[in-house]
Length: 111
Image 1 (cartoon, rainbow, N blue to C red):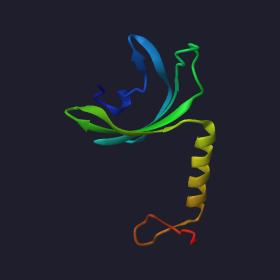
Image 2 (image 1 turned 30 degrees about the horizontal axis):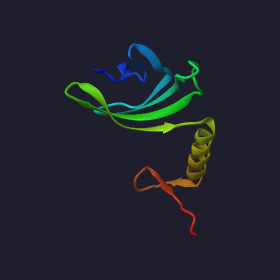
Image 3 (image 1 turned 90 degrees about the vertical axis):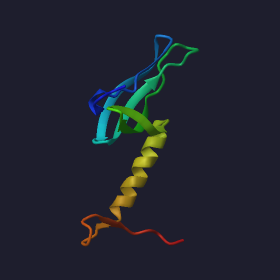
Image 4 (image 1 turned 60 degrees about the vertical axis):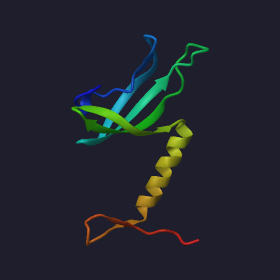
């Protein structure tokens, strides 16, 4: 268990053998609730080769002095990652700043 969000890792071993390895890490938010994005790959146990890189967005909660995983979302392919990026860019392209809140207002398409 990690005491700081900088110490969290997505590496995983099974019976002492690495089966998931973290390639990159980006801390998106810090605090008692933290969000971290990991770029990682998993070992194919049949071929013993590392698979195509994936992305995991993981939410951690600090409890008892250590960070514990609360939830996660895995992006399983480059195609899915690009689709997510395209949708987010399209949504925010239509967003206008809200003068009342200092945030954004998103206009939605009517069906």
